[in-house]
Amino acid sequence: YNYVGICIGSLMAFAVARNCGRPLLNHLFSEKLLTKYSSWTEQNNRFARLFALAIFFLGFATMGTQQHLVAYWQAAGVEQALAVKMYALVLMAGVCGKVLVGILYDHFSAALASILCCGVAIAAFLSLLLCTSSPGILIPALLFGLTTSLQVILPAYLTQKFFGTRDFVSNVGLLTTILYLGVAVGAPVSALIYDSTGFYRPAWVLHALLAAAALAAILLADRLSMGAFRRILNCGRGK
Image 1 (cartoon, rainbow, N blue to C red):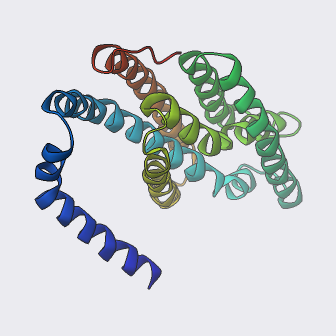
Image 2: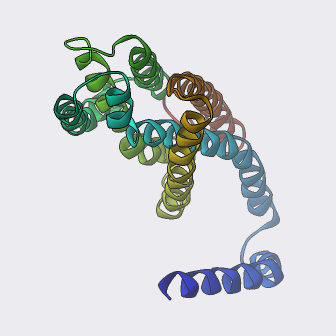
Image 3: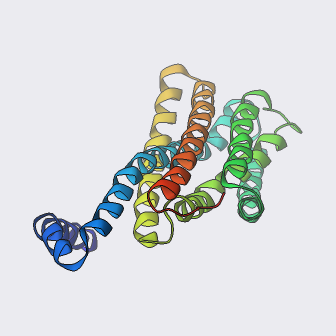
């Protein structure tokens, strides 16, 4: 019932804004100011779509892998008890990863921090292909644990960086929804790949490619965002 109310309220607000929004704004603000922020909104849509796509890919790849790790390690010949311990290590590494990712984005540019973080993600997926026995299994467990922290830190931080603080909560809420849509799709797709081929390895390759695509989308969105701040709002965004 809560979500029904939210959907109905959102549709009503959209209908009011669509039919009454622009005439009301014309009475409240100058045409010059409206033109300025209309241009910002149009430019916003370009890097917003890229960023949303990157967030979807990250949700798809991370949880599409995490939900199947124990089954994958057992299928690769790892004993159940060890596989469960490695999964616990993934969760603990994820806790530490949140702190590390936060430090990276605090001390480096958004582009460089994203390259480092997505690089770890790609390495995590590739290490799953190569390291399937003890003690090498520790490598993908640690790397993937760090990767899971991206879906917590990255959407909120880069939303503020790319879009500014205006409508921050709404933007984060929308992007978090897109993230969890990727989460919801990734796990069954990985299961479908395993059911079709008998192996998880094609799924890990797909997830590595999606992590690389997410990085490319983030870097392009970063450049478009900085350009939009300079050309339309006449101010620097900062790196």
